[in-house]
Amino acid sequence: MRTLYRRGAIYSPSEPFATALLTDGDTVAWIGSDEAAATYAPDAHQIVDLDGALVTPAFVDAHVHVTETGLALDGLDLRTARSVGEILAAVETAVRAGGGRPVLGHGWDERSLAERRPPTRAELDRASAGGVVQLSRVDGHSSVVSSTLAEAAEARDHEGWTDDGRVEREAHHAVRRATREGLSPAARDHLQRVALRMAARAGIGCVHEMSAPHIASESDLAALACLAGPDGAEPLPDVVCYRGQLVAAGAEARAVLVRLRDLGCAAVAGLAGDLNADGAVGSRTAAFREPYADAPGHRGHLYLSVEQVADHVVACTAAGLQAGFHVIGDAGLDVVLEGFRRAAERVGMAVVRAGGHRLEHVETPDADAVARIVDLGLTASVQPAFDAAWGGPGGMYAARLGAQRAAGMNPFAAMAAAGVPLAFGSDSPVTPFAPWEGVRAAVFHTDPQQRISARAAFAAHTRGAWRAARRPGEGILAVGAPATLAVWSAGGGLVVQAPDDRIQAWSTDPRSGTPGLPDLEPGTAAPRCLRTVVRGRVVHDDPSHEA
Image (cartoon, rainbow, N blue to C red; front, side):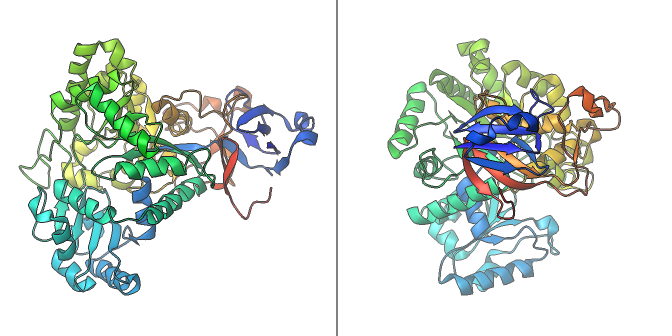
């Protein structure tokens, strides 16, 4: 299939004035001007009149949970709930419509509820008439559950159980297993398709799936890998598979790979991702050196030791895999970075640096931690939407940690300036698939000192995320590159944005050859995705856009 796109704007640093692009099969075959495109038109199977639309590399979401996203999309969306009563009414409605099926909801935040608390177990029991209910907090690290589910999951026998039905840590994991293990293959297939289609509609051509034993089974990851493969019947975004399975030796790591391969997951990038060193700020499970401001004496929870981190890094390195950890609090980061240092003592710093290892979230690094991240050659996989949702003087971070500590969180500019490679993601379903909003959040960080340019943010959400998966040749529109792209309606025109007013807008002159991006000033509408293409296969076409 040879497709010619013409009469638009092509975001290609190598061809900054291009207005046309030709794909041949799964590859970009040519980029140039509309005048030159006439040469290729007779041999094209399809000609797409862009009518001024923008063509960019498709986005990559560097941290997602596909099945969990499908469950959130199919279940109760509680992100807009403003009272306990509103949540209970939604549960009652779901029970009446559900025919006895479990009621699963996601997204409540007690700070947004009038009562400043989530529903209790007793309230869920009444609303569900004794049914199975799990409602997860917006960060996904705690839930409230009904008595029937608590009993089925034996949640009372695990750390993190509280009698009002709130569960975290092992109790939360037990509840999640109890509600997910009953999914039939057909139900799981449906949920994964729903999530990947949503990603495609957002202009995302690839997701990094962060599977882990406490989130989903190995068969869940294998099913996703088969579904999204290049031979799949339905064109869908690419999936890079990670499994957050702790191992202590190379042989153990290879055994995990063999099990996954036997299930049908032939390619695993690493034993990384949501291998949790700690938890989340909102659930007060992230591990900090100092206590939470709104929970005196409580510092969160550490889930791994320095030696476990070191053993895991050595084992993954020996098996040729990426290692990586979910880490948010500064105490958690201390453990992880010391573990990497000890691993480097055992196998050599150059070997660790060459491993392409990564950290997920890494929200609270101070200057010393940033320097150590650079020294170890680690990539920071971060979520700018977290700052947009919870940063700033009146946000959740300030409420949990105090304004001074919260002000230093998610230091994108400091990390980028120091040389930390950045990859952007959503942690969906924690925040939705909305990559332009992620770029906007980085450009307009709540701390002006930590803002980065739109160009740098866009790169972190495209090429930077490919590099985080050790696939550096992707994420750019150039001749010979994979034909993975997105077409956008950008009604406000294209601009070259600096991160703040202190930087001279030297590149706004078109003669500089700096390709423009949509205007992302706060209050402007995000671009609408008209088409998403993955290796030449159309995975999304806006029905209102005529090719």
